Image (cartoon, rainbow, N blue to C red; front, side, top):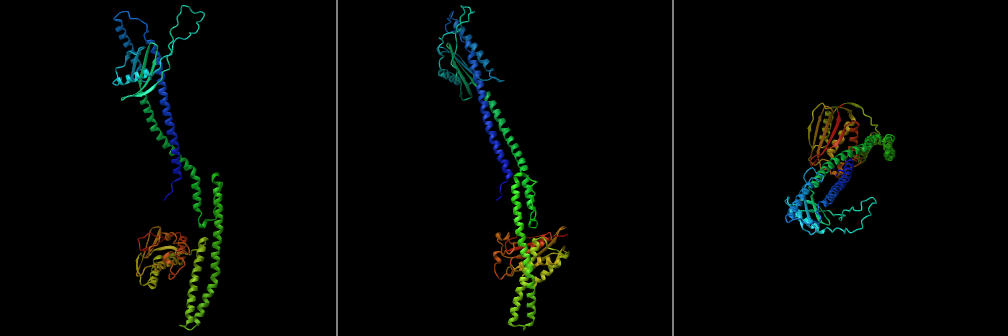
Length: 504
């Protein structure tokens, strides 16, 4: 499973943190703005309720004639109608705001109520209900403050009108939402309802602005976090690039500490110490392998020579000759192992010397085919290559690579199986593919098939010769030629190796 990107996680977490902050700030701001608008509306409602007090007629004023009440009622209604119309344009909006008004006298008789709105009946019912819940004004019998000394004694103070501070509520009808305020005066009662349609429209506009601006801000935050995290992770990428250059042939490399940020100094120091330990261990193992191969090479050569000379002196066909012949085969096998170990130690140290000449790979493949026909005549061999496939390399080492590949194709083939050899060249590389019938290689073995001394489960039978050095040595020789040896993905029942060599 592919791990998530650390840089992507930084960008997403930054966007999530900024998003939660912006959403919280937007929500709090929206409610604060809404409360501020409602508070301002309440202040204006209170102001209009207080200004309506002088419009009330004195309660003790007697009528002059029978027609006077009708004229007075008509004049009061016109005055309250005009007052209602003026309210519609006095709440801080550029358009006419729906307003409802109910005026009662001291005896709860309706002096005026709105009848110009479709929902006036429902709104008027809410206004009357609110007036019923509004407490009565306090008594006006209070000791007046003393008059100034220069005041005319005949001056009469106007009556003090101090209603209780009105309480404002929000009520909802079937068509709109209303803000209602009511006040009771000694001679009358008044209730005003103003539609919150304009406030709702303004708040909807602010909400839409937030809904558009917050995602845009989050996108900017995510992009900014992506760029900032990229800059912060640049030293890690540089460190990774240096580490990638440290290969088996470059364990002596060290990462300079002065070229990076102080936060990575301890990491670099630990990595350099690890490289030092690896270099020391690898050098010791490589030296032991090379020294052992050198030390064993001379005794094995002497032993092989003595066995060959003794073998010539014994009677042909005797039991002694058979035993000496078996011993000579084992000595030659041991000499081959020592030679491979010596080559591997040289490859590990980067000291494998190549005698580069022009090599005709077509000729080498034909020689390998002759050996296959001799060693495994029961196998069917198919070829697909042309003459004149020339490369520049060490002929003896390339022969050893091909011998290892063909040897594996023979040893791990099926009964009455087959081998296919394909070769083609491009302007820059030569590709040689050797395919053979075989049992399927387990996935666990495919990654380790080039490891030294490793033999997969199908090859653990002692009837199959080898100790697991052939493929490892073949790949090291190929890489010394700046090429590569790979195990190809094939269909079931076959195995394929591809040898790639540069043309120049």
